[in-house]
Length: 354
Image 1 (cartoon, rainbow, N blue to C red):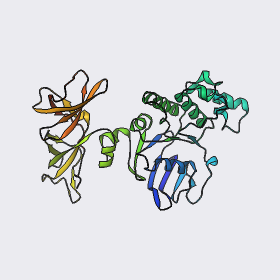
Image 2 (cartoon, helix red, strand yellow; image 1 turned 180 degrees about the vertical axis):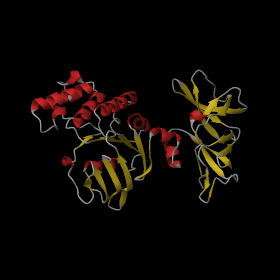
Image 3 (cartoon, helix red, strand yellow; image 1 turned 180 degrees about the horizontal axis):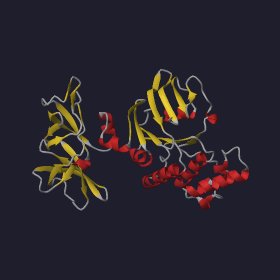
Image 4 (cartoon, helix red, strand yellow; image 1 turned 60 degrees about the vertical axis):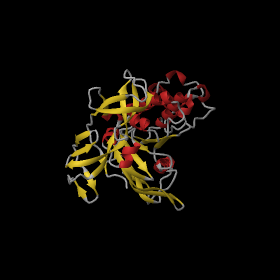
């Protein structure tokens, strides 16, 4: 039985529908992330799960028990922990007392022992006596997570947990947070607009668009096999290159013909017809390989140095542009012509936009 289940959840503010027909479930010990642009409804979903808002339609169940829907269980009775965007630590309490704050049903000695153990797991063993203003942003975030874990909740919710941190610290802390959640066997739901954070932390990611889940899948599948054009465009970097279907599993573009291990949908009325139906094929930067021996030449339009590699924007003979990720020792000038070829493992194509 899933630990968390959302069934046909709808939430609106007046006439403005924020979440609609939302369905997903999460097994115990798994980490999920709701990923989407600002205003897509992801924080509203989190607030509904926490019990801060009542759903207008549908139901939410935790451990098989309905907490929203026909009944509304108050937040404090749901055994759900929350990590807020601004951490919400008590400035007048020490780190240890902050972590102890929400624990009940144990002796003070037991509470402090559990709090100390969680601080050790969070890499903060020597910080118990400090106050929040004496900590860095990353340390405050880990204290907030330890405090949320201290009462041993059934579920942890994280609302944009890394948004106040710099890029380098986000990357490191996202790995640390995943490790801590897995080490404690905690089920968690995080919301973010940053796909790098989502991919680093979550086992499964739901891409939200206008209050609906476009795709609920692993990070690998979202990147390599997006279910919709929106997901393909939202996840990762890439461009769409026009192509024509030449068979049930083949598509031809100006960069050559490719085999697809999935049937190609030509349009709404015709599948795999092999009659030169037009498609837009998704090309990621790692699909376009720099190869001096390749017969196709492309012009360097712009480049961005990323350390280990350059991200080149290249103009094809047709005038269309593609992206290419090239090792950084291949430093080509703007305007230079370079050879390229395709190395595509998964052909992802969609009906062209009208």
